[in-house]
Amino acid sequence: MILGVTAAEKYVAAAYGIVFLVVLVYVLIIALKLGRLERELDELTGRVRERHEAEREQREKVPVG
Image 1: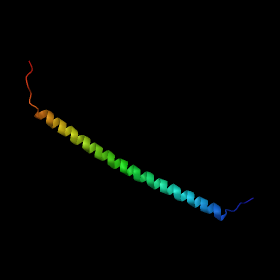
Image 2 (image 1 turned 120 degrees about the vertical axis):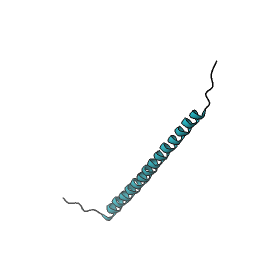
Image 3 (image 1 turned 60 degrees about the horizontal axis):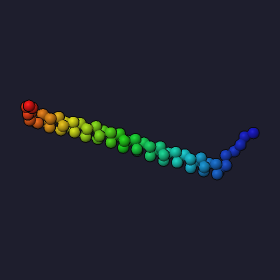
Image 4 (image 1 turned 180 degrees about the horizontal axis):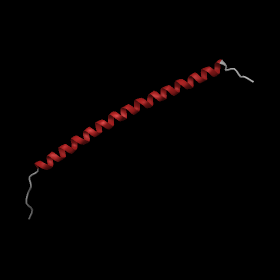
């Protein structure tokens, strides 16, 4: 027994396909933004470490006691 696909079933399948593509594009955009934010965070962390090391070197050593 061969069943044909009705027009309504085609529209439902198309709607599911479109929703799937929209969600996929959304996830890809979020993944790209997350990657960019991680790179920026790494850069800022490096800058803070460099500044902290520079401040540590500039501190005057004072004898204690």
